[in-house]
Amino acid sequence: MTFTARIVKKDVSPTIKAIVDVTADGSLAIHGLKLIEGKNGLFLSMPADKWKDTSTGETKHIDIVHPTNADTRAELFKAVKDAYEQSQTQSSAAPTDDAQPFDIG
Image (cartoon, rainbow, N blue to C red; front, side):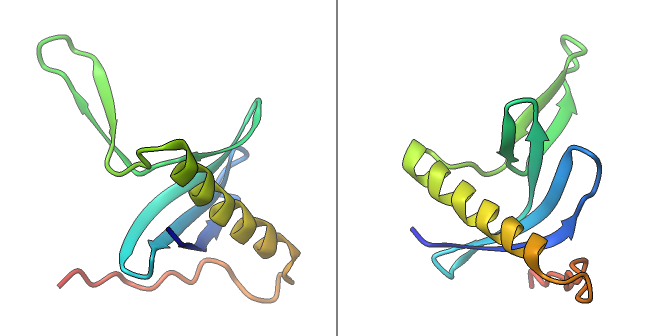
């Protein structure tokens, strides 16, 4: 599977290094991944939803989309990390917050 990553926004917070959109095989778009700096280095947070379980009162989280095997997860992480590193080396003359509206219709 081939992933193409685009940095939508950088340095959102001290720990969120980038918000990223990814295209898989040129045919599936995934929006809202987060590249996060954790205590053990960078990791990728997939788009997720949260809700409150009315029976327990707990807040629950579930990934909306995620890789189903380690190889795909590694390829996805590499594409995102490479895009982030490339964006770090580019001059600050080009803004990175250039996301275009997403038309689902």
